[in-house]
Amino acid sequence: MKSDASQNTILGVIITATGVVMFSSKAVIIKLAYQYDIDAVSLLLLRMLFSLPFYALIWVFKRKQWKQNPLSSKHLISILLLGFLGYYLASFLDFKGLTYITASLERLILFSYPTVVLILSALFLKKKINGKQILSILITYLGIAIIFFDSGGITVGSRSDVITGSLFIALSAIAYASYLVGTNSIIGKVGTVRITTFSMMVSCLVVIIHYMATTDSELLNYPIEVYFLSLLMAVVATVVPSFLINAGIRRLGAPNVSIIGSLGPVSTITLSMIFLDESLTFIQVIGALVIISGVIIISRSKTR
Image (cartoon, rainbow, N blue to C red):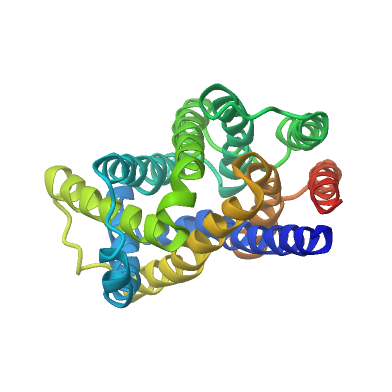
C-alpha cells in the first residue's frame, strides 16, 4: 500500500510540475502577442475560442457518461463560480497586468497564491498546515525576495505602470487561489475532466460577453502571428496544463500543488530571457536556485 501511495505521489509531482511549466509559458506568449498591438480582452477571447473546441470535443465524448451521474444544483453553482474565478477573472486580471509589467515580474507576483491557498484551505476546508509546508513556503519566498529586490532588468518601465500592473497580478493571484481551493473541495465528487471542461466552457461564455460589451476591435483583422500565438497559448499553455494541474490537485491536494507551482517563476524567467530578451542577473540565478530547493523539500516529503 505504501509503495502504491508513493508511486501515486511521485506521479502527482511529475504531472503537476509539467503542468506548471506549460502554464508558465503563457505570460511569454502573451507578451509576444502584445507586440502586435492587440488589447487584453481581444487576446483573451482568442485564447478561449481556440481552447473551446477541445473542451467541446471532450463534452461530446463524455456526455452520455455524465448524464448517468447528473450534477446537483450545488455542484452546478460551484462550477459556474469556479469558471468565473479561475478561467475568466484570474485570466483577465493576468492579461491586463501584463500590459504594464514584464513576464518575469508577473510570475514573481503571481507566485504569492500558494500562501492564499493555504489560508483558504485552513479556513474553509479545515486542512492543517504542517511544518514542512511552512518551511517550503518560507524557502521559496526567500528566493522570490532575492529576485524581486534585485535592481536588474525585471522592473522596467515607469513606477506607475509597475504598481498598476502589479496590483492587477496580485488580484489575479487571489482569484486563482480561490479557484484552486474551490476545485479541491468538489473535484472528488465531480471529477477532474468534468470540472475542467465545464469551467472552461463557462469562462469562455463570460469572456465573449465581456468582449461584446467593452471592445470595438475587429477580431479578424490582426496579423497572422497573433492567431498562431493564440493557438499556441490555447493548446500548450491552457488546455493541456489545465487537466494536468487538476489531476495533480486530486493526487496531492491544493496546498501541495500550490507549492510545486514555485517552478513557475523559474520557468517563466528562463523563457523570457530566450524569447523576450529580459535580463537575469547573478542574484536572480541564486533566487531561482532557492526556489527550486523549496520545491524539492515538498516533493521529497510527500514521496516519503
